Image (tube, rainbow, N blue to C red; front, side):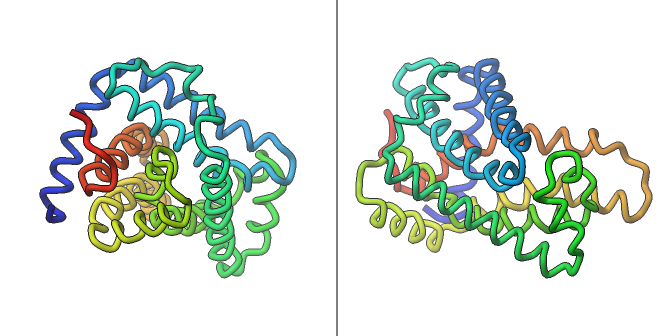
Length: 239
């Protein structure tokens, strides 16, 4: 399947999946975001733990999406059953998420703003006062590293092969069809990029107006990731 048909089919499939249980998926997505944000309340380690927790919850979310195609209704209890993911896969996902954090922190350190780097570990109050351009730099670093796991995350969540085999399959799929991963990276970066542009050009556009599309993109992304992985032939089709 070529890149353009793959994206078109995955876009179609992702919206169909989301439309099956729109209220349930919206509620669960909000809960996932809340759980991830609660990590910010943990002193010192909170900001670094946020991404691994969000990654594990996203893997669990993939399980819920997959099961919904077999008639299972997504629910709150299913989101928290982390033991559904093999411990080897959970450890791998956590380590990769931490590497993404390190990648983001490296870009933040290269910015030359030591205050921003210190504020990152100083708790939610000071974290919110990091200059916008530095915060977006950190997000860019984590997003670039996270994009490499675009196909790997569903595979680790759903398949039972050895972790090394699943990672190899996921990276091979990314090399063959990188377009869906790049599209998701661009779309997720767009709201923050517009926010930075608005601040730099003093356009006076309210932040919430620009971040609302980003919120809905976050809700839609797991369905697009799952559909892209399946349409890439990496997951079995569901009839």
